[in-house]
Image (tube, rainbow, N blue to C red; front, side):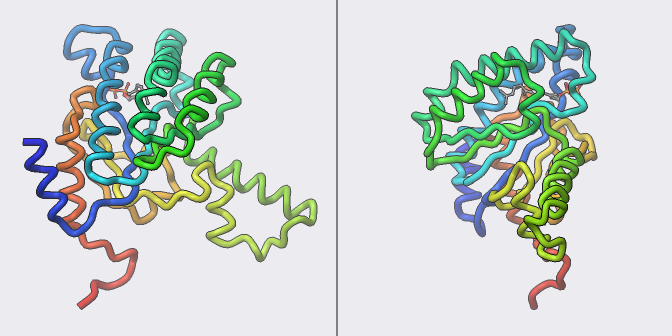
Length: 247
Ligand code: FPP
């Protein structure tokens, strides 16, 4: 079945270069089974592997995963530490396999809020995987779209106040470079699992013209097949970027 979908999308009109994912539904997955929430996050790691391997197979260039939002710092301390432990374990255990697969990992967000051990694990996965050419994997951690925009505004305002930049020079290109995602093309496709119809403060600038796919599947149940189905859905869309359709 997965290989049927893969063949179909390979025959289609081109795959999205950049897919971003809001991995939602871990808590509900756990609750449905009478398990603690962290069990859902643990199972969600399997889906991360599926998304990475599926992206490589489908020929996607960039996969961006929303792993921990700024708002998630307000969850109970036990859930935060379970999530941080999982991120660290992922970074330590999977870096060699990711390097072998040709995945280059970048971790983006307010990393100064993370504990030193988590920072070390993150630096380790970025160093080990540097130069991978099969897929660029962005893990968004301690990330919020509004905070990202504010940081960029502050940095550019400081440059202007210090006379290093003229305000009229601040255009789309300059602004984009000041975001965490500076230098990366905008996502072509956003997938949000678990059926929720929200952006939740994710990549607010970058998603301006992104196609959105919202399957009902809870994140821990997400497989490469779901990724291929999302790409097939994307291939049916007509992207106009605010213009009229080509006749
Ligand atoms: C949202 O589900 C998911 C998260 C807050 C965390 C996502 C983290 C992982 C999948 C684990 C590890 C990730 C990496 C990249 C190694 P929720 O808890 O909000 O679910 P709910 O809406 O059903 O409560």
